[in-house]
Structure formats: structure tokens, C-alpha cells
Length: 451
Image (cartoon, rainbow, N blue to C red; front, side, top):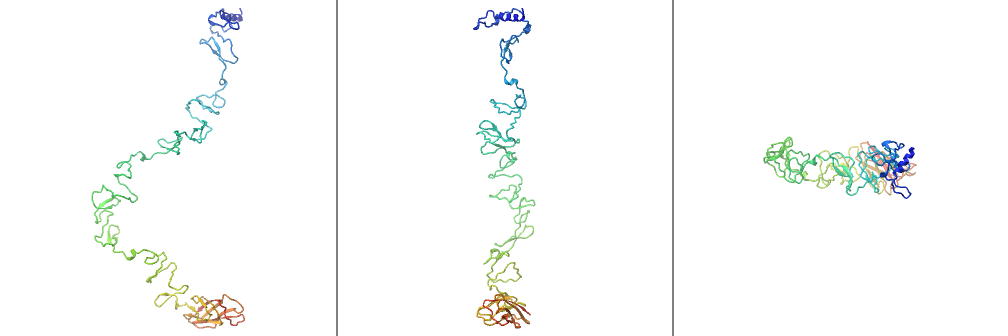
């Protein structure tokens, strides 16, 4: 019998006693299978394998029993069966590799990452949180109530401080000071409170003067007495009035009430009665009235003051009792005056009398070296006299100029004649040399020399 025939006989023999099906073929029952012969074309011996009888193209074969003799149609492979493994792109990652996930991946279960996770699309060194769509983001994080975001990095032993008013962000608050681990107390190695009675067992140094609102108790000082400081500035007890101890002061023994105390030596340890203060000590400083004037202030003296020494005035001196715009001199009583000044040597005062230069004529200036006469009204005379005091030794020479009017009639003004040692005569002349009177209001500038 051929191999094909033997295979057919084996299958048919297996169908003996089977119940017919709807198509007239019986369903196989392997318990009725009778081996009619050896299937020499099926692999031979105990290694023969029975196929499933039917399968789909492309499906895989899977074992149907534990003895490895029956195969089944295992169905089609998934798409991952034909995809390579890798760390990025369209590959399948391994759990122990450094993988870059470029797509949006959803982890529905709690995932444990034992290595570093690198989120390349987020900002570096920022706090992470989830947005309304549950995406991990690195900006605008507002934690839910009760959740707190840490600083990201901190030093061991530093404290955490809040970094916002919502109590959701923490910052590294730095290390605590050494006082943070010390208890408060009133003595010993404790921190004192300002509103309690504290005992200081070691020497304390005050760089500024301390202020005691109540009497302090100095427990290290064992006797009553006057207090002073030694050479190191430590408070010690001395003998009252005896000068004992550095800083203690010896009094005068007797003194007058109201007198001032003055030091009796250069070391500042002896006091003497310095006597009563003068009346100036109780007077206020000021600029007028019953006050003391300061050298750098403007002072008005309303009394008659006699200055026996030489006084220098660095500013203008105003003599309110004298006439303004006048020359000064001293009278027979040595008072400063502005009238009847005889003038010192080389100083001559000009004057005019009557209506010599017209009615209402005025003279401005007290020094003959330069003065001005303003002509009055009704002047008819063509010459007028000026007198001087004191008189010159030999002669007087004056230069005159009418600075108001220049015309054919008022052409030139000059001294007329030699004059005397105490007066000169001046006149006006026309361009033809004839004498002419000045006009009212003309100003005559005059300078004189004395010999």
C-alpha cells in the first residue's frame, strides 16, 4: 500500500464508529482510533506529530498536548512580534534600557521608575506638577490644597521655609543659628529674656552706657561705699571722699551752695570749690537787648559801650544813630560823628553856602577829591564859590565838568582864578568864551587837589 493510502486508512480507521454530522461525515473520536499500519510518510516512530487538520495561512502552530505529538492553530501573531526592540523611535523598549518616549504615553497603573526620568520638553530646574488635562508641566504650578512642593534641592540640616503665601511652596531656609538649640533661662548657659530677673555669672562688657530703670544689685561688691572703676574699667568700692580706687573723686570737704565744682588735678580725682559763676553765665545769647552777642552773629548794641581794646569787625558795622551817606570823624570826646568833622591830614570837606549855585542847590559827597553839585533854580550868576575845610597849605586846584548839558551857551566849565587856600570859584562859558549861567538841574562833577 502506498504512503498516501496508508495515511487515508489511518484517518478512516479513526472515523469508525463515529456519529454522522450534518454534512454526512462523522466527528472524529480519538478513543475509537485504530492504528491500521505504520505512517512511514509522517516522520516515523514516536516522533510523529499530528496536525490540527485545519489552519489559517499565517497563523502559528502551538502544541496541543504535553507529549509534543499534537499541533493546534495558535492564531495570528500580534504586530509587536514583527517589531524590533530599541530605545527610541518605532521600536519596543526594554525595561533595563535608557528609553526616549517621543509619543504621549498614558500609564494607567502606578509605575515605578528606578532610574532617572528625563522630560526633555520641560524647563530645567523647575517644579513639576500636572495641569487640568493631567499632563506633567513645569510652569504655573498651583498645588491643590494640602499639597506642598519642595525646593528641589536643599542642604542637610537646613530648615524649610514657605516660599509663597498659599503655603504650597517650600524653600531652603538655611541653617539655624547656634542659639536655636539653647533653652531660655535666668542663669547659667541659657538665653535670658528681657522681662525677667537674670543672673550674670561672668563679666559683661557694655560698649555703650547701660540704662537701668531700676536700681541694679552688684552681688560681687561686698561692702558699702562709693563706687569707682579700676584701671581695667571694673566697678570697685572705694572710700567716699578719700580718693581711693581708680575713678573715685575726692571732694573739697567744704563748699558754698551755688558755687561750681572744678577739678583740682589733671587726673580727675580731686574736686575743689570753683566759686560762684559770673552774671554772664546766667545770661542768654542773642542779637539784641539784654543778651550776649556771638562773634559770628549780627548784634544790635543799644547801650553806650566802651571797647578798651582793639576790635576787628569782619562784617559791615551799622551806626544807626549817625547820618546816612556821610563821612565819619571823632569829636573832642572821641565819639564817632558825621558832622563838623575837621578831617584828618589830606582830607578836605567841600561846602556851598546860600544861593551860590541857585535856590535848592545840593552838594553830594564829603571828600573834596570827588563830589557833585546839582544846580538849583533861578541862577543868574555865571560864577560860584566852593569852600573847603580844613584849608590847603598852599593852593587848591579843581577840575569841573557839566555832565548834564552841552550846548553853545553851556560849553565849558572850569575854575576861575587861583582862589584861596580855603575856597575856589568856578564858572560856565559859552563856545564864544562869554560867561553864562548853568541850567537848573545840571550836575557838576568836581575833583580837587590840595597843596
